[in-house]
Image 1 (cartoon, rainbow, N blue to C red):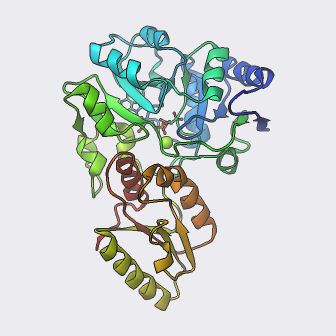
Image 2 (cartoon, rainbow, N blue to C red; image 1 turned 90 degrees about the vertical axis):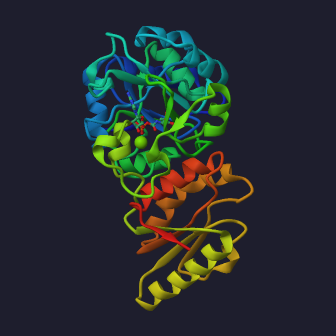
Image 3 (cartoon, rainbow, N blue to C red; image 1 turned 60 degrees about the vertical axis):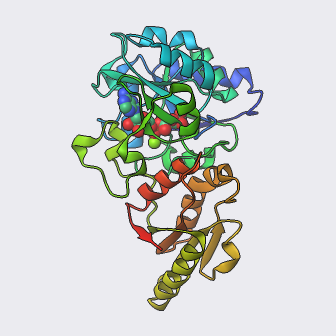
Length: 351
Ligand code: TXA
Ligand code: MG
């Protein structure tokens, strides 16, 4: 399959190019597109066969359903059994934006879009390209992140191309994704509501609106969760993992720096190529084969927006070991730590 690349202005996408992509979606094809979080791989959510092709292209396990993307709040109603008052509040406050809400689904949603669950995950992206594509396709778009299953989520069209060239119909290139980690997933099909995946919308902001909001234990898990406890299928799957062994060193900053220096020296002694993922404030402390800053400790959104790109870039340098600093689990830091821990396969070292 030849993958078409459509380059657009992220703020004012060319309507003719969006129309080409919308036609592909309407006839059951696959189009990768930018959102404000990460790139998504889209298919017509109401066409079960098209959604199955998504799983094939990504080599994604069939038990892990995609998120359905809509362009208007009113497009949610036909897809769900009921919209609670809490759901209305969240949609009003946080949409369009990096928040996914889990509802009980209606009969029109094909089983391929829910992996046979009685719920469906829905979000309304803010990115003008995503919004334009959904509008012009005139249907909800099922879109998991546009990476091969298990790889870090793509934050540029180039990342999508590396993983999926030849496996999908088209990529809309709208530049780099802003936020850099995926949407926050909140389950409103249970009481009290449950945060299943931390992401671009902070837990603290959601709790302020909902009052009672529980963190699923997995969100801050320090080891792999038993299958029977997973409420979101994505919790069980290995994720974001580069080829190199990632280790995350947790503790207060001074102790973390000391421990990483010690580990870097030990691995160098064994002739291993070491990369250190540091922060703006700490990177000068290290000597290693590769030292990169993830961003500033005083602005964790800079860390979020570079994390997946850095995991790909450092891996491409052919290192054996990646030693990553931890950051505080506040605001978007909760999502950053969740992704880093998953990328490390829960190889966590306490400093
Ligand atoms: O920011 C995002 O959310 C990006 C962009 C493209 O919108 N999408 C994304 O999709 O990250 P994906 O497929 O990589 O992750 C979807 C997550 C998975 O963890 C999946 O298990 C969960 O949402 N999910 C989907 N349907 C669900 C459901 N009915 N109940 C619970 N979790 C669900
Ligand atoms: Mg994903």
